[in-house]
Image (cartoon, rainbow, N blue to C red):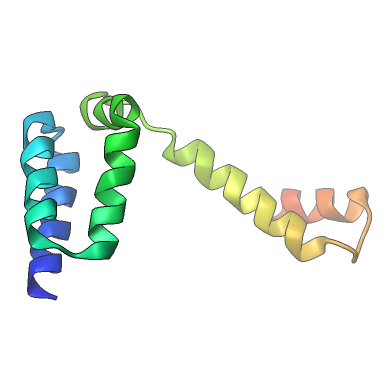
Length: 96
């Protein structure tokens, strides 16, 4: 667990610092640690290396957009089968 915590904190740091060079070192450290769940995560990062590099190095973020989409989908699912579009619209406007 201690090794997992160290690796998780190191990953957070490299993302916050936009340190692409540290990403390769972090991936190697994950391989050496032999934690299956973390290895699966690292393999996913390797599979989409271009997007990961852009996410680490570029200053822009889709966080606000994704948060709003998630909020709307949650409301829609909560209202599913309980009301029509007008009720959903009122609920969305009330929470905004």
